Length: 95
Image (cartoon, rainbow, N blue to C red):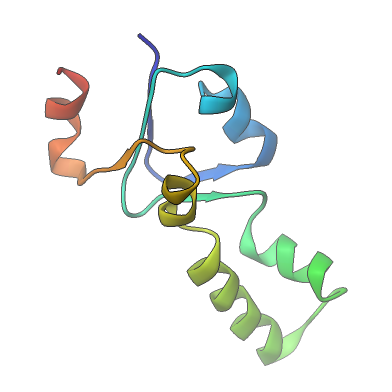
């Protein structure tokens, strides 16, 4: 079986080719610290808000992280099978 554990950043095409559900990975787990999104917050804010700078950019980056760059939206959409705690990773993989 192909098992993926997302521990930190999983963005765009790089996420897709690392045994994602899109490429028929069998199980995809994510730690609560994982960021699963199309791109990083800074790049997304620059594109969405056309090169935003200053304090507004930082606020928008934080908002993007809260809304998108975490494992919960991916889990809701079925791209991640479960969000697991780091200390349970070995146990979950060995099942």
